[in-house]
Image (cartoon, rainbow, N blue to C red; front, top):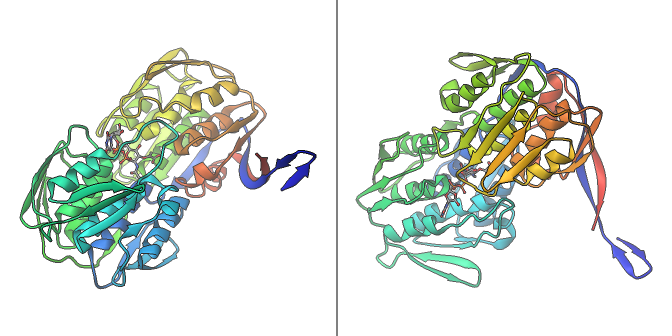
Length: 437
Ligand code: EPU
């Protein structure tokens, strides 16, 4: 803290990425484990009162650390080493997720279903605002109520209890497809009495993997991978060993990094079937895409073709790749239209991309990207995870040096991103800087 006359200036030491643009990416890289699969899987371990889970291929990310911290707070024992997480929830006694941890990560709401199902009571702090628009939790609460929970909101907490002592199977029809609410409903229903049906369930690979995880724990779930799920409640589940799947959004981001630099890369450790919509768009943009059962090779064209995308629930193009696609389209030969039907206001990256020289307009929930624009390096600010990824992509192709500030957003969801990009020929260094407020 510095005191200058009447002003007190506080400073925080933070990380930034300094990117020297203009390098064509080339080579092979392996995808990390999925963040958005790890989180519900870790939450699901709360359903079991004995044994130790061994979870492999868990990415070493800030969001995983925050979530593990939350489980610690509840009483779980955890050890994390070389992407394997050992977890025992047998000594969990607390049923309260405090604001200090929930405010760091909205996905903390995932503990609601499992705590309620196991202990008959859960208190979870209400998650606060989000950088890219409203993110309500009404569907999570609706699902718990359908299963017999009584919910009240008081002093900033969701308080959920079961007057009947045990959750009861029910029919849950989601008016909107929600990954998180489907995950919570599943985790509660596996310990409920009787049969639960979920219609308009999210069919994202993250939910499919959660179903596989719960089935391996002893749950009975039919319809895995579809929008209609049927769950037979079990009396008890067991701790298991599990291999997490690859991160399809990290994979898409690395492919976009190759495409924006005119490069050619092979991604290993992936399942191309989970990325059909994204790969189709890369092909439409002129990229050559070749796949095997567990790899994707992308060769960039001489000139990128402008390609519209609309982000919608799986199997459509994911909202979590929208920002990266906008960055890519700044280099396409013409105008493309990017629409987000999941988060209508998720466009914080656009003013920053424009500061790098892009020409992007926002019309309601559409971004109009006028390409190709020559980008030139400057200092830009991350505002959320995927927005940060789009700035890194732009920095890879910008002339000169781009500094991406507040990299902590990026570190929530990308494991060693600069190490991976540098191994493909990028020139990125991480430095500390002081941010004044
Ligand atoms: N929604 C409601 N009510 C609810 C819940 C959701 O109206 O109770 C709406 C949302 O406002 C949104 C739509 O439903 O319009 C879909 O939201 P969803 O619930 O599917 O999102 P989420 O579960 O909170 C996960 C990912 C997000 C990803 C979305 C959409 C995790 C931890 N997060 O969020 O990932 O964007 O699904 O696919 O899995 C990211 O990784 O950068 C990220 C934000």
